[in-house]
Image (cartoon, rainbow, N blue to C red; front, side, top):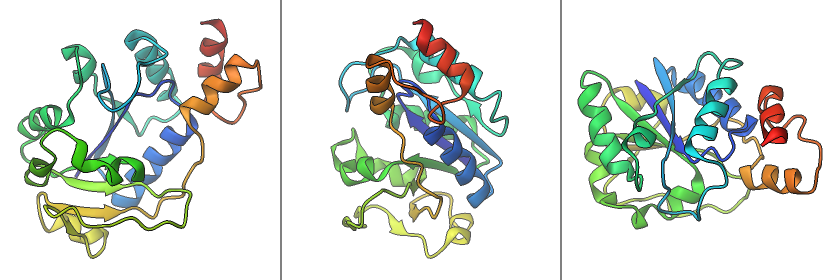
Length: 200
């Protein structure tokens, strides 16, 4: 199985990196790709350029060698629609099961995504835990709930799995806020990224 962890990574932080590494281990992925978007369609404009975000990701994964970067959305340019990207990935890795990793906030609003009802034909969905006791509706109509992580190996797509990985409560917006107020960033993002952020 191959994991795809999309996001703006604006900037990348230890929450992204530790979570991705943890999920790869939990689900025994052969490979896990961080997939930075070019122009997000569900968020406001980005703070850092595509080049800056890619440079930071490239530095960050030197400390997390189990992770890889997929640059296809940035290479393609324009608005990033995950359904188009996944169609490419599934075609490229046709002998592999593809798992799309998303946060609980994205899962709750998943039906606002372009062609959301087509995803189940392409991938399994892996949902990250959230820092709240709220339990949202777990049904997406088009996906079935995975009984356990081993269930993901029995089908090529169409299952949703709720990860047991530990939640790392860091956000890119928190980091940008700390930069703006000249606060310490230790423990939030790799030191190599802190150096870049303080020089931009």
